[in-house]
Image (cartoon, rainbow, N blue to C red):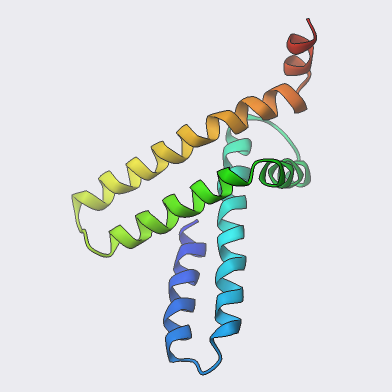
Length: 128
């Protein structure tokens, strides 16, 4: 996530100096999508044991089924990146902790959905 965020910042800086900013916007949008997948796949990886291909597939299904979650993650990510430019020291730690808490709070619905639809325990408990 840090790597994707730093690439976005470098791309924004190069876009301001470039004569053709359309390519920079394209890569910024691709990196935002990568950031969303990174967040969702990371949370699925922490809670469940799936293959990497399956985690990306589940993340893709979730993002297509619930696009509001993508918007929330992007707004939280860009908001925290924007605020981090104006704070320093201990406030960056507090802001990062708050960001992680909000991302995990927003993703509890996704983790419940994955448990119900993609695990044997979840499928058997919903059928009873």
